[in-house]
Image (tube, rainbow, N blue to C red; front, top):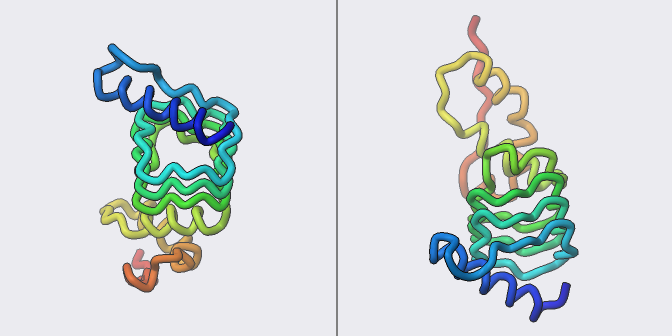
Length: 147
């Protein structure tokens, strides 16, 4: 997909979102080749990105609320300051270790009173501490598990 075509789709999609789906067109980017695309701060709310190839895409600050990313390839994409949706539409995405560590880090920083959740946090603390922004956010310290 060329840059002009992508910009047109994003413009029409933004209109669609801002007019509560009355004008413009919902972005249909299913299986689109978006490798290396500049999607910084893009409004991708409710966009259909199923199966899209987003490897190396810059999604810094992108709004992905409600976006369907099922089966998308996000390896080496920049997701900093973006909103990764937590619903079925984000299942089965392909990520690299950098993104896995980023997600693990955020999970480990949840405050939860459930022992199973705490044990899961302990189990992935090593991966979480590989988060590329860990130094600025603080290292996950392993706590002694009490029974």
